[in-house]
Image 1 (spheres, rainbow, N blue to C red):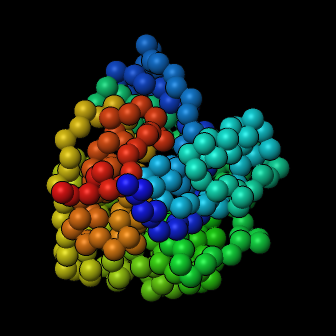
Image 2 (tube, helix red, strand yellow):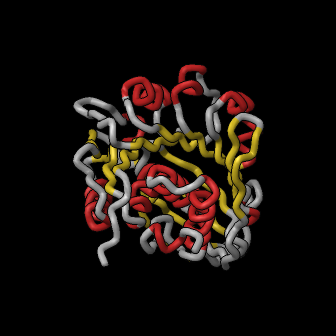
Length: 281
């Protein structure tokens, strides 16, 4: 039997190359930790979310920017392989964004990001259909996020990471914000948002409408080796599940299951089953 296609999703956001050192423990300030193992993968919150959504069965296109370099070509090739429409992924004069990551034996991490082409994300010649949901993050210029919110007519979700002050216009227009518990504390203005999903790591996640908790899901146990892409996978799954008409509780449970699957893989863009595989029975 053919699995029905999931809703259309446009991801507007960052695309990076992740250069990751896996070590026994994270270095302290000024310290060198030896014995690491180096990995070079594709990442960036936007690209991670787009690829995850496509692998979960969504119809996905990516709006962003990469450099006119080998990493930009690599990003396009991998997006195409994952089933992401990269027509609106611009090639700009500059380097593709890069994230320098250190991951310890407990899957804790430290990340430094060099924005590169992500600072040049533009909406030139980009349009949004009323039937397309839009998912964004805050690794690109806030002005771009606000422009999308002002022009897109469909469902809009924002993974408000990294944390930064949010305008009243953005709070009024966005249908769903997704944050972790630390980001929620740093952005008290989210109390005025229509719907907020908060992740609590291994403890799961909850969905709030104002001060009211409307759904909660437990975390799914997993042997974590890399948590860098877990939140991005969670975001993609939650938006797809909600837009496919699943209840908040089931959508949240599926997103937690997808996030759990992500942490057990070394890559920030791991393989996934169709979203239906992760929904509660």
